[in-house]
View (cartoon, each protein chain N blue to C red):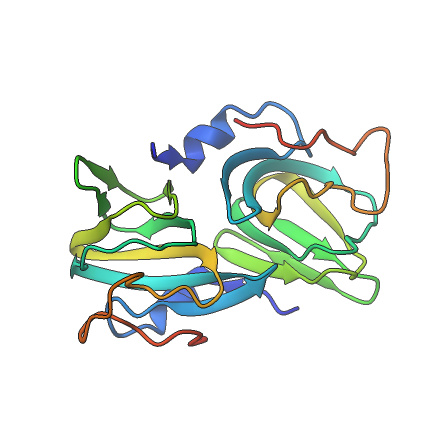
Length: 120
Length: 120
């Protein structure tokens, strides 16, 4: 029951697209991730995902539209919905999702699929 | 799949200690709440709770210690652990917890127990 600080957690991340778990509760995980560039298209069969932008500009692309977000903006992506995430500059994003959700969902990508359950 | 903005959501709240749901996913809810003063002691039998401070100073008190927090600080309170929350000035807090978690947990309090499932 020690508090965490998001800026401290983000400050320890030196790579993009590798979510790190900062808390686990009720079968869910809260993760922090630094992103830059464009992530592969994917969906999650059984997990809803919530993105909260902490710093920078971040977007979630769907096949028919793009949602642009900045700090304090959040977006729920329901299970089954194909999407990809992107950021032109570096952005810091908080994720809320089921424990052990694979970041690339239904896709295994040599570059982007990250190990599960890495704490920071 | 419309984005939300936390500052916008907090700006619409005119009362203290009444959490409002801004997103629901995987049986969980993300809520926003404005607080000031001291909440009753309580615990949640079956739900873990995560607090993320958005603005102001906020504290979580346990029977044996107090955790003081500011913006960007987060704290997980595991199920079963007695606690109360407090803020001397007004604070804005984001909550992550199981859907329909009663804010006063095992306690029903005429003043503080809030209706479940109120969206904003």
